[in-house]
Image 1 (cartoon, rainbow, N blue to C red):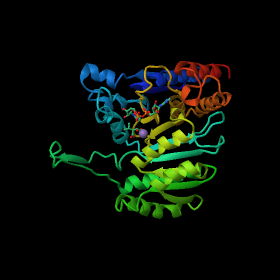
Image 2: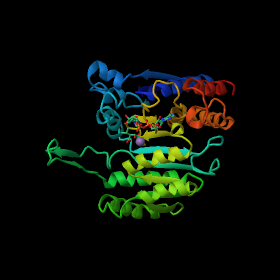
Image 3: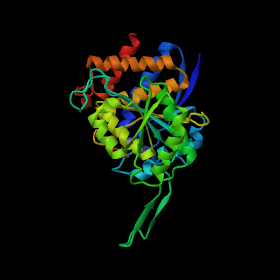
Image 4: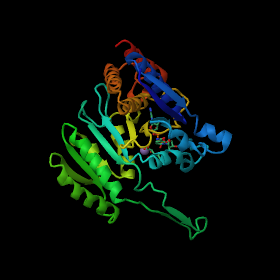
Length: 355
Ligand code: NAD
Ligand code: IPM
Ligand code: MN
């Protein structure tokens, strides 16, 4: 029997609630399809901070490096610990484990209403490929006289040729496997005349290697508008770290709810663990109420199984989520229903068991 080691990092807020459902779903499909999961849970985040004054142990990266994959809920407890402290482990995992490809699919499922008027199921079906290891998120900056009236802050983005080339290639490879074979690169080279001009140049040098993929570019501001006005024209979108962050909340929202949007943070060379997590955060506004939608976490767990080679299990979860949404029963309140997080999770598990 195949056996997989998984590090589980539920985190904070609704991260803990949605991961509980994702874990049950994982164990259910594993039983059903005959493989075994060895899941080790790490209660890091705000809970750990209360006891130790830090959100994770100093050697957390070396602990995690023993696992091929990490499943994360969400981190952040802004009422108690500043976000730029709580979120350090997330950024460190992505950068130190060289998880440079962040893959964030967004799909409007049948049974789900988009906040955009008159959008039909399937009209939104795209994937955002976000550069995840450098760009605007590198730790390059500082304060000068910050507590004085002369204070200043500097934050520098770093775009390397290696980093930009590999993510644009990943975008092309992803687009090539999709039906529409269309890659859109997000830029802002009208204003960011070094970093984004560099992205434009790299795109231009790589595009000829992929004659079968149609390519275009949008400035990020126009991209936001186009995603609202004509999301159906987009297929695969490649962008820098911060643009990808912003755009993937938007693509999640227009697909009905960020509570449906999964993501993976992949080290394609498999030299380090890859990380799977919903696009959403710890949602303090609804945390502890058992109302969060667990689907994004469950679909992230499916992406993890696919990465591990259990593609049948991954497809089973995706199919079941699709039919669960289509039937519009036991939906959580972000989708207009009144089911709790655990009722939604139990319904998905019931459907797996009755397959
Ligand atoms: P958020 O994604 O947590 O919440 C934004 C809005 O979406 C809220 O109204 C929330 O209730 C709703 N929402 C999110 N997930 C939902 C779900 N599964 N079901 C139903 N509704 C859902 O973003 P935020 O409020 O900006 O951030 C809250 C905290 O989470 C902050 O500390 C932030 O830094 C952190 N954060 C962490 C991650 C992560 O760990 N990957 C991602 C984003 C934000
Ligand atoms: C995300 C989150 C993170 C990011 C935050 C919490 C650091 O918003 O995964 O989308 O900006 O990458
Ligand atoms: Mn985000």
